[in-house]
Picture 1 (spheres, protein in one colour):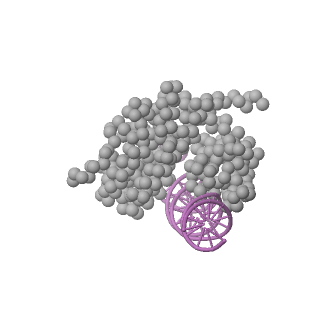
Picture 2 (cartoon, rainbow over the protein chains, first blue to last red):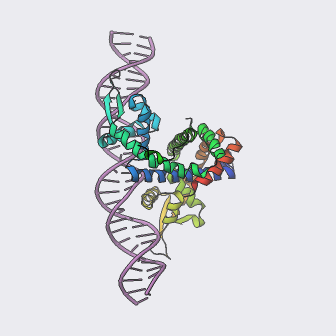
Picture 3 (spheres, each protein chain N blue to C red):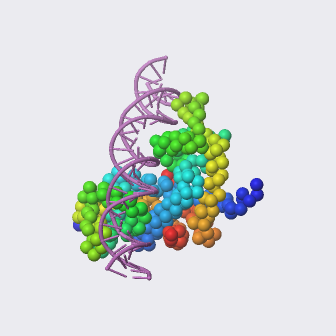
Length: 151
Length: 151
DNA sequence: GGAATGTAGTTGAATCTTGAACTGTTTTTC
DNA sequence: GAAAAACAGTTCAAGATTCAACTACATTCC
């Protein structure tokens, strides 16, 4: 009977914070995803991929790095890039100095689709997140997320 | 050319915070999910369902309320409950006073599985989240998530 | 009281995700 | 310099998710 509770539990307050976090997370993500999808036909992950590519040297990234950058499994990225390729937003280029590898390269259409999607998406992010917070809260949130994002 | 930028962009700082948030979110979720899966065979959503049920009057909830409580579509909940039913952790009971409805009821096995899973999971949450934050940060995080979780 | 509308939950089919196995290349090690 | 180990990326098949129908019951409104 005892011995079962050798685990340090969460305090009542922590528990409340944790649940708020889970709810906020899941609501924000699903709302933004739905809106983005509706407005531009992109999922959040696809949007993230296009953003990463657009900011990279030569608007291209190796699959492995891209997968890390958007925090997605290799396998999932393969499928995702295949779909983006079908949409005409990305193309694959074999990597000359490492013949195992490929570049995922942003196409002009991809860049345009991203620019298009970004307007509405950014507005939503502002409205859904930042408009609800004071500058101080944003500052602390930044510190907190900085601490939490490390692997 | 102008008119394109009528959208209020995010400030550099806000942008950084937003990206940290996305990364932290996705890392935390995938790590906890993986660990939970490994330790107990439950996904985070399944765990959430069991928690909700365990805290409800009579350890049972109507599908609709349960779906809202775990923030999942009706359809997804149907499938999920079907799987949990196959695992023996939940059972469906027809609702007598509203013949359209069903109760999802936590079984004894479900309660046991939850208790089992909770130990390790809570430890992970503590380790992955709360141990990284000061009490003040936790307090502000709670306020922030409180503001963000509202629909 | 009965047509219209709303709500609870499920179904089906297409799409997406997952994880392990696999191919082909590079790097290491001895 | 060859064998072993590591790495990049894809494939396959099983399982999960989505979204739009759909069934069946409840509620509303005249």
